[in-house]
Image 1 (cartoon, helix red, strand yellow):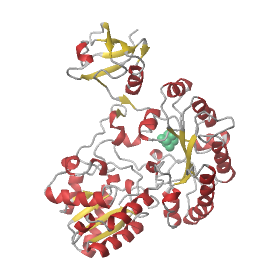
Image 2 (cartoon, rainbow, N blue to C red):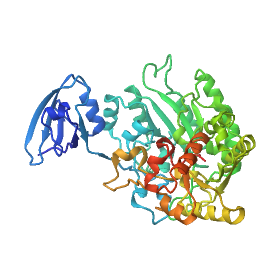
Image 3 (tube, rainbow, N blue to C red):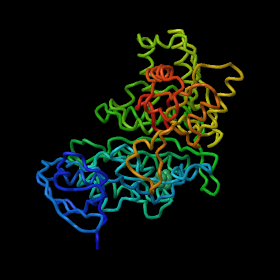
Image 4 (spheres, helix red, strand yellow):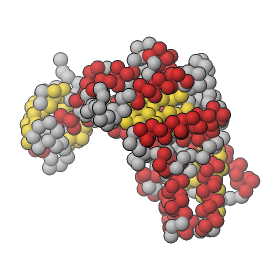
Length: 497
Ligand code: SF4
């Protein structure tokens, strides 16, 4: 029976693949006698030998074989996108299950893919990873990967992930560590579910497996590089889902008080490298100032998971406000829309900037009516909510030269997953689309004002305002040409202006 293989989309002109007679439309079946699973696997298999044997299939089902003297490199094949795997869990706090109805289909897919975990830092509960896949991770050295542990106690974990087969996460993690793979881990904390003794047990069992130990059973193996704790996020759409308690402001404050202290102890015991990480949301919900730079790792580990975004923004702003470039903000009048948790911090920074350079920037906290007001991050604001907030602001304070929307709320492509497909759904959005499918163009037409993506910091914001001015009358389709690629498609939960 014919193997599945991976489709060749195109062949680079002048490449070894072209010289070997490989054509677009063929299917790559085997490399050195091994089945080719996907793009990552192709790269791994090609790197194994200087001379590589490939087995392919033409569209007419005829099979042929070629050899390439590739020196361990690729041979110029562009392979078809891989399909993202779907998780087998039913986590009690799964965001996908709490989405309001009526959004585009791709937003309801519970993707969980170890390849994305390795490539882009997405978290996986490892539910779709059987022993074969774990062994593959070890063999192909897909390290580090990111694992959602939530808790290590098997009975509680079954309740948390809603899957009786996925209680024993340590067994899977240990298989990876034994194979030399490092892991970043996270626990989403829900009061009375996996906090208290459950959390302390999780902490202890993962700490025992920390990376780079000089003696003990885990010496010389892979290790746990970090453990982050993130407060549970609940939307207003939980009909039919198990009861989960939300994290109150007082709970968040108490968590910060206890665990920032502990986190410093863990860092000390880890030769100064932060290991226990607290997501920014604990601080913003608890109304506590985020800690200084030293609290976060040099490499900003787990930034995409909301750990250190606020501190990073503040550090950048502190330097930027006194720079020559910041003076180009002088006289500018813009409205910055953001989530309610970041707005007070942003307003504080903008007040300093305005004083320093004579700009007129202000931030407004946008209420999230679509997901519910308990959702306070910028990345989950919809076009509708942004539109209402901009109108309300204009009615009370008058027009501005630009309305700045959070980059994390706009999608121009599928972000880091754009090389993967979600069940064949076309999810590329070149025109710039908010979660509710409103486009940037529609928002601009409604507001009769340029709509500018925030970027990740004030410097990028200035670039964006200037670029919008140069490209007066730009359309949403030009977003990627007009603005910084790095200032678009920021992580969706991001605390960005
Ligand atoms: S692993 Fe859990 S939270 Fe993630 S998509 Fe699956 S059910 Fe949702």
